[in-house]
Amino acid sequence: MGISKFLYHLGRYVLMMRTAIARPEKLSMYYRETLRQMNDIGIGSLVIVGLIAVFIGAVTAVQFAYQLEGSFVPRYYIGYIVRDSTIIELAPTISCLVLAGKVGSNIAAEIGGMRQKEHIDAMEIMGVNTAAYLVMPKVIAALFVIPMLVALAAFISIIGGYLASVPTGLMSDAEYVLGVRSFFEQRNITMMFVKSLVFAFILTTVSCYQGYYVKGGSIELGRASTNAVVFSDILILLADYLIAIILT
Amino acid sequence: MIRTENVFKSFGEAEILKGISTEFYSGQTNLIIGRSGAGKTVLLKLLVGLLSPTSGNIWYNDVDFCNLNKKDLRAIRMKVGMLFQASALFDSMTVEQNIRFPLDMFTNMTKKEKLDRVNYCLERVSLEGVNDKYPSETSGGMQKRVGIARAIVLDPIYLFCDEPNSGLDPKTSIVIDELIRSITEEKQITTVINTHDMNSVMEIGDNIILLHQGEVAWRGNKTEVLESENQILRDFIFASPFLQRLRDTALEK
Ligand SMILES: Nc1ncnc2c1ncn2[C@@H]1O[C@H](COP(=O)(O)OP(=O)(O)OP(=O)(O)O)[C@@H](O)[C@H]1O
Ligand SMILES: [Mg+2]
Picture (spheres, rainbow over the protein chains, first blue to last red):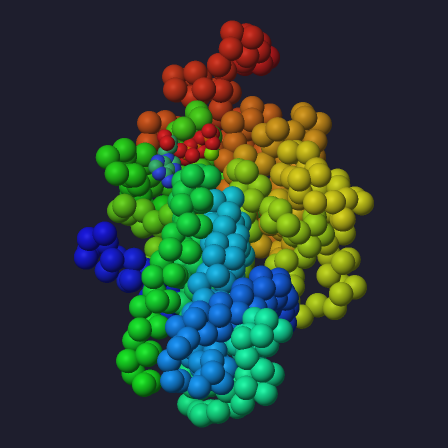
């Protein structure tokens, strides 16, 4: 992708977002749409996020146990490592990468379909600010719901770590709990929420952008949906790196 | 009144409209006719601002429509109703929700008032009792009529219809034409219709514009259609030998 193409997309993205930030024509319509999106994004993603979180915690515990084997690091450190690595990195990043796949592709396909079937044109003719009506409720819903999902994922991961280490005899109940309660830093929770807010914003707006400007037919719609996921993922990882540099 | 001033439109190399200057009057049904691919839909989309002209200008009364800011454009659009060629109904909403959408978005009517208004519009397009059907559960002609109902629900001052009666049987087609004509006269609105329906041309053609190869090849009203010697118009309207004979007998009388 050439630099000019990148600038072109960036420009159009900024333009869409600038149009999207406007006073709603009718607050109740935006409110209703936001609730619908919260339900779709939040409730709709509970199972998958929860499932992934259990395994993240379990795998982290098992692998660190393996790496620390024979070293002089006390075993209860595993609980501490599971807690911090999921809170700081794994819960926000992996959850949001998965949500980009699930929610992002869905958003791009929904808006893209509306563009192709002239629904967006029809709304524009009525006088609706379609950039605002189609983008804002999704962004606001995601900014509310995704941090909650991530917090839940972090919590479930810690339980996952417990399930993988205590019943299997890797360590005792007391050791894991001691680990989880050691060296707690408030700042890491802040970092988790900053990450999830930024990632939520990226994945919804990038997906809306991909759908909003779709042209052509079903092949292009499929491509837009894929692009939504790919570009969201790349930008999420990039943002992850930048936040890590800035906040640590 | 809407006026176009030397409007050009090209897509890449293809020049679709080459200098259209014309007027669409209020209180009249203005018809844009022309062969398939002549650029009728493109012209209509230019008129509502879904496309912008390559060069030239469009005026809504004294307002320079092409250079409006977004806010003023939206203000005008709230007075615009449009039926799309493919209807463009929101397919995850029922017929009632479709027609109610502009009311929900822009009015403070109560639930009851909205429902009454929706039913009134449905009645005008002879579609009572389909409120709870989804667009995919209705026929193409019904979708057209729902599209018209949605276009008129906010009492537009400008009404644009892209082929309102393609896909309708002759009887329903006449009902729709009559509906559009009566709304136009009642409220003295500016109505622009794309059509290649002969009946419409003869029944409601107050101001007819024939597009041909990107230019206005002929303009006039329904009585002038019969008498015109313009070859392009005659080839278009009286396309078959049967219609030519019909025209000749009509003129003899
Ligand atoms: N978005 C576009 N990009 C490129 N070319 C287009 C576009 N829209 C329309 N055209 C071209 O413009 C020409 C006119 O199309 P238009 O849809 O206005 O025809 P029409 O008169 O409405 O025909 P019909 O009666 O079949 O609906 C066609 O040749 C079409 O290929
Ligand atoms: Mg057309």
